[in-house]
Image 1 (cartoon, one colour):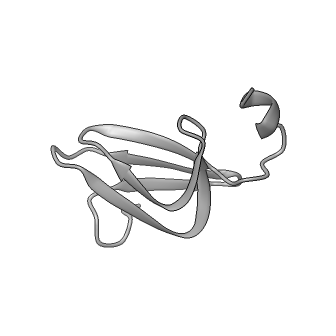
Image 2: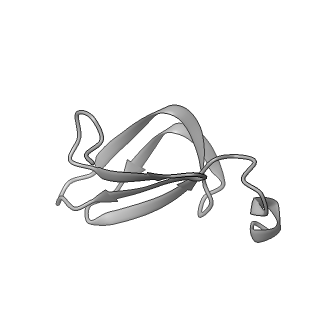
Image 3: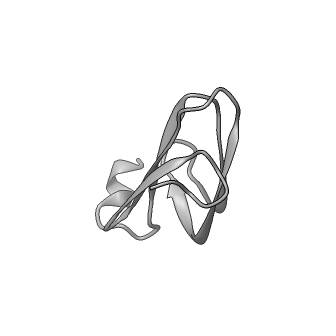
Length: 70
C-alpha cells in the first residue's frame, strides 16, 4: 500500500512497519503515531527516506526491543 501523498510503499505489522522508497528522489514519510527507527534510535512521526532505500520502523515499547538496542 502506498503512503498517502507519496511514492513510498509501506506495510504495517503488529509491532511497526516497513517503508520502501523505490524512486530516484528523497521522500518524506508522515505517520499518525510515533515509531522508532532502530538504526538511528530516533522516535518520530516523520522520516526521510533517501532514493531507493527502505526503513524498518518499530513501535516504542516493542517486547525485547531494549535488549536488541544494546
